[in-house]
Amino acid sequence: MIVARLKDVSLFDGRILSQFWQTSPVILEQAVEVDALIPDPSTLPQILTKTDLPSRLLTGVEGETFTLAHGPFEMFKTPKKPWTAIIHALEHLFPEYEKIRRSIKWIPSWRFEDCMLSWASVDGSVGRHFDQFSVFLIQLNGRRHWEIGPVANRHTLTLINQPIALVERAEPLTSWTANPGDVLYLPPNVIHHGVSLDPDCMTLSIGFRAPDAGALLEGAIETINANNQTIRFSDPKRPHTCAPAEILVSDLQEAKATIIRYLDEPHVLEYLLATRVTTPYLDMELNAEIDDEIDPLIDSVTQWELDSGCRMAYVNQTLYVNGERIGVQTPPELLHLANTRTCRSSDIRNLEKFWYDAVVEFIRTGSLVPRANHDS
Image (cartoon, rainbow, N blue to C red; front, side):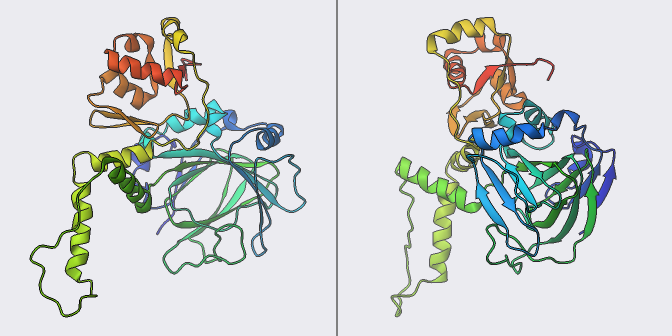
C-alpha cells in the first residue's frame, strides 16, 4: 500500500479523492481553510464539564500504560503527563463543523457519524491503533507527527493492560508532520499514531459510520419479532440418517437460505439499512415547538434547515428520518430537503396533508429548524 501525498487538492474534490475512498490513505497538504474551525482553548474545559457530549481524557505516552477517564467531568485540570482530551459530536455546538461536513458532498450524507476534536498537550496522543471506519483528520492548530501504517489484519494483536485497544509498533508505511490546514484520510484498519508537537494541538476527525453485520442482523431479528414473520427452516425429502445428532452441510445451507429468503422479502433489506444509518449518533432532547405555534412559524420563516443531529435518507422514494420509516412516494421537495438539508417555507406549504403533517412533526420535535444563515 502506498500513501499518496497531494498538494492543493481540496477535501471537497470528490473527482480526485473518490479513488482513495476505502482503499488507501492519502495526505492532503493545505486542503482546508481552518481559521474559522479553531475553537478558543479556554472554551473547551467548559464543554468537558458543562455539556453531555461524549468525552474522554487520555494520559500517557507510547510504551507506558495509558490512563483513561470519561466525561462529563466535574472539573477539568490539565494533567502533568502528556494528555489528550477527546470531545465527540461537536457539530452540535459548532455550526462551522456542521458546514464542513455538509460540504463533503461526494460521500453520502448517511455515512457521516460525527465530528470529534482531539485537543492535546505536547507529546499527547491516543496511542497507536486502528479504526474500523473511514476518517478524515484535519489539523486545526499546532502540529502533529503521524506514523501511518501498516494495515491491521487478523494476526494483529492488541496490547494487554491498556484501557483502549492499542497495538504494538510496526514499521510504518510513512511518517509525516501535519500543519494547520493539512488533512490525513485513513480507510478502515490502517494503523496510525499521531503525537502532538505543540501546546493546544487540535485535530478535527470527521468519522463515517459503517454498520456491521451484527448490527444489521440485530435489526433483522427485531423486525421479524415485530412483524410475526413465519419464514422458517424446512427440510422436505430429508435423507435417512444413522447419526441423529449430526447437523449436515445441507442443513447449514438451508439455514443460510432461510435467512436470505427473509432478506429478499420486499423492502426488508431497505428497511434494515435505512433505519440503521439514519439513527442519530446522540440521543439528545431537541427544543420542541408548541403545536399551535407551528403554522404561524411556517408563515413567518423563509428558509429551514435540518438540525445537525437529524438524520434523513431515502431509498427510491421512501423516506427515513432518525431511524424511522416516514412514508413512500416522497415529494420532490422533501427529497431536496434530504439532499441539501434545507428547504423553503413555500415548499412546505405546497405539500399534501400527509407530508405537511410530517414536516410539522419535524418542526415540533426540533429536527427541522429556522435557517440561521442563508449564506452558509
